[in-house]
Image (cartoon, rainbow, N blue to C red; front, side, top):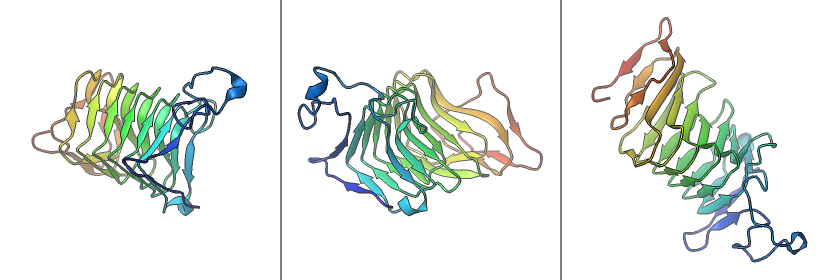
Length: 231
C-alpha cells in the first residue's frame, strides 16, 4: 500500500527513536535517562509496486538504520516510484536512504541527508536526484544498476564533509545534469567510477571530476561510452 506523509516546513512529520525527548517529550520513562543512538529502530519501508504512490514531504527521519535489520537504512525503497521531497534524514547507524530492486524509479529531491553511519544514500537507480545536500556522511552518494543501463537526472546537489567517496558510480549508471556543488571537506571529491560498462551512454556531468582510484574501469566489447566535452 501507499504511505502519504506530507508535512510542512513549519510542521514536519517526524519518525525518530522512542528515546528522542526532543520530539513529544519523554516517551520512555521506564528506561530512565537514556539518550537516543544510531540504530535505535529499523526503517520506514516502502516496498513493491503498491507503494509507488507514496509521498514523503517535509519528513524528518533519524536515529534508525539498525545494522542487524535487513535494509540497514533509515528509509528503504524497494521496486517503487515513491517521491521523497524536502526531507531530513540523519543519524542512521548505516545508510540514510537505500533504494533496491530492478523496478526502482523514485524521486529524491530537496532533501538534507546528513550524519549517517555509512552512505548518505545508496541507490540501485532512481529517476531524479536533485537539489539535495549530502553532508557529514561516511560516503555521500552511491548509485548502481542491476538491470542494464541506468540514467539518473542529477542536478543542483551539494556535497560537504563526506568521508570516503563523495559520489560512487558503478557500471552502466550514467548521471545527467549540472549545477552540482562540491563544498569543503569531502575526502574523495569527485565521481568515483568502477566496473565493466556494457551499456551505451555518456559520462557527461560537468563541474565534478571523474575519479579512477586504484580500480580498473573497462568498456566491454560492443559497448560505446562517450566522454562529453568539458568533463
